[in-house]
Every structure is written in C-alpha cells, then in structure tokens.
Amino acid sequence: MRSWAQDRGFTLLEMVATMAIMTILAGAALPLAQEHAQRMKEVELRRDLREIRTAIDRYKDFSDRGLIPVETDTYGYPPTLETLVRGVPLKGDPDLRYRFLRKIPVDPMTGNTDWGLRSMQDDPDTQTWGGQNVFDVYDNSGGTALDGTQYSSW
Image (cartoon, rainbow, N blue to C red; front, side):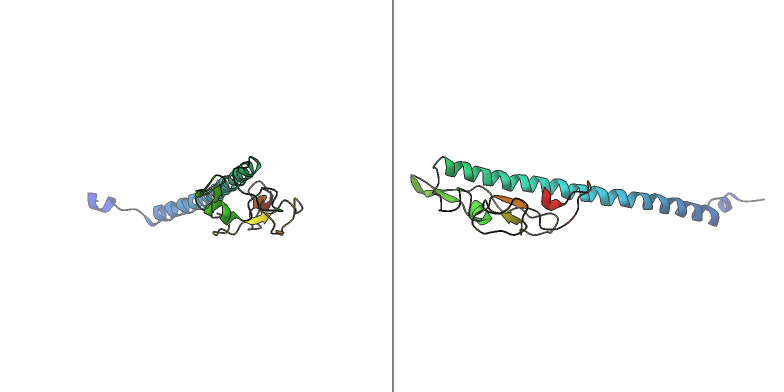
C-alpha cells in the first residue's frame, strides 16, 4: 500500500519537461525584449532630436524678429549647442537671458551629448561640421534602426 506522502513529489521526467518548456519560452521572449529596448531608444532619439531642432528653430525665429543679437556669418543660427543652454541676452534688456534648452539631451545610442552638427554652409548630407553655426543635429552612433535606416539620416 502506497502512502500519500510518497505521491507528493515530481518525477525526473516532469522536471526535465518543465525545464525544456521554460527554456523555449525564455529563448522566444529574449529577442522580443531586446527589440522592445531598441525601439524605446529609437523613440527617445527621435524625441531628443526634435527637442534640439525645435530649440534651434526658436533661436532662428528670435534672431529673425530682432529679439536677440546676431553674430555675423551665422545666418541667425546659434553658434553652438551650448549657446542654447547658456541663453542669450534679449535686446532692450541685457540683464535678461532667454534659454532655449535646459540642458543638451543625452544621445540614447551613444550615452553622451556629442551630437553631430551641421552648419548652414555645410552640404546637407555631410558628416563634418564647418563650425560657423548650428543649423541641424544628427546622431553620431553610426547605427542602423529597426526599419533599416541609418540613425544619422533622421
């Protein structure tokens, strides 16, 4: 006669089958998790690029309307990204500085704030910055997005 205490455990076969099923499920879930993490970085990259470009456009708008002093040969664009963070004095009240960005966003693909820059005088698809002004920014990572495009083309 078998006692109830002898029927409570799992057999070795049940344990091996359970581990095999868990391994298959984990193997299927890992690529999905990696793709999700990559997609979240791409969303953050697009948001950061939009934030910087919006700040550059606001700076250009302020210079076109004569609200801030414009340096020669800049076409009204900021000389550096740091200018957007430090701010510029408004005409009429030199004590008042207008800041276009709180801080330079961190590039989620590289983990630093070293964005690729283009000036108004540079070719549209160049990867080198002439240094005259900041007309546009792009990602420096050299990576490829999930949709097959290069991050630097965003």
